[in-house]
Image 1: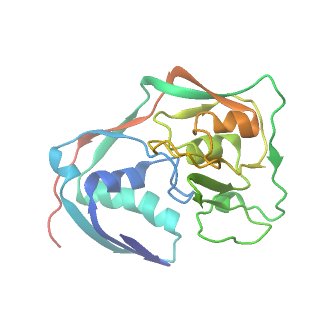
Image 2 (image 1 turned 60 degrees about the vertical axis):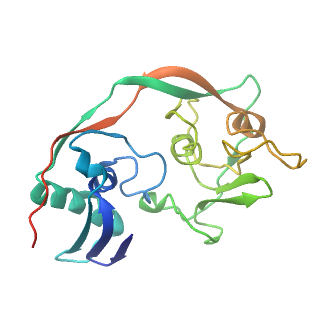
Length: 232
């Protein structure tokens, strides 16, 4: 569990691999820590099992993104002697492409969208002029409220349940609303007439966007060195 107040970090009982993912995941840092996390390879077995708590205080008030990004990286590098590097091997991916039909996308109409606040995770609406991103249940289905997203953000966040990274190949720019509804992966077949399509077919039926299996560049963080920290 992690708690924050301006300029303070309190991370409780986290494995080191999880801390590395939070600190170095460039897709998540500064954007609400959502979506698919970059895999971590290498390092000793204890980074998956040993848990640590971190309390830190900045010299001045800082945002959660700053605390859990650059500041956490500095702590890991100084106290855990962490050294990592990034690799981009070719891996199985899905390409998000256009169908032959015209895309059925709803343009985002918000008027007060700040780039650093472009993604929000919330259990309740936050007003008509701020984009909202959260998922809930609707009968047997997963139902997303995903407003004000680019296609790339839709791939990374809403489609994060699929088993491969999703790469935007649509060529479409701008921000849109994606009220996606689908039957979750692994769910038992349902006799409910309201049961939706799978996450693989729902984007095609609802937005005119399809997923195609392919090979493409992945992203992996490789641990070169890490040490257990000394007690304070």
